[in-house]
Length: 286
Image 1 (tube, rainbow, N blue to C red):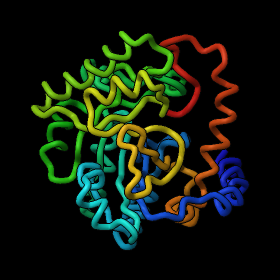
Image 2: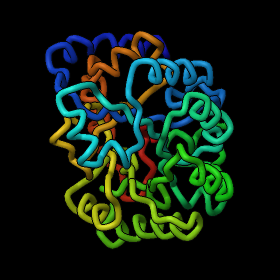
Image 3: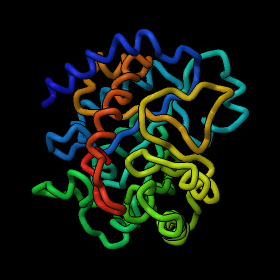
Image 4: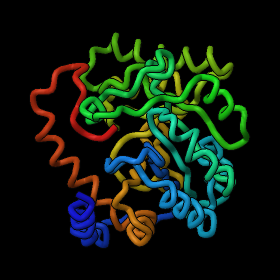
């Protein structure tokens, strides 16, 4: 499977050469699992993740989402080098066990978007392909999240309560998913979350508006850079990092040469989404 993923990435490079974003801006990297020991494309080996973080520390200015989306930082670096922000989805326990120590070693800030129903009930993640996994990954506990939030590196963000595709829900259920997640994080950690990630990366104007009532920023799916001076705070692009993103592909992705990857993947996924009912787990990545 990794060979197929690599071949797909290589096939999209000509698109990236032609249409890559050349303006300086904010690059947000999206991770999921670190060191889970599976073959899933969203589960990176610890050594590979550590190498990526070491590379970022040597070559880029790394910032938190709070700093990256402030007007002062954007204006300061407008016209100069890219900023890089690191993010993680869902709230897997292996983040606490494997990713956090690496981030501490390299002093890299990160945002972790949490699906609160799994943390609250301490039940394994079961959406999408995880529902068919023989061994489902465990969530972090509130005490672990509290420890992360009290560090000077980690920001806890929101990823809805049940990790449902908000674009398939009626407005009342969208509001319930967003507000329940926001309220639980504020109550359990003592500070309201400021940042949100749309499950499955999908949004509509209605979803965007309701999320904007609760959060400062929201990250979407796809793959792109966020140019300085034109930051869409409720539709921030991220670049998903996968197992197949070995060192040289990782560097190409940072420089926008693989932005076509998610463009073509989204086209394929649109065909696969036909017939999905509201609330039904979708067969794509988290």
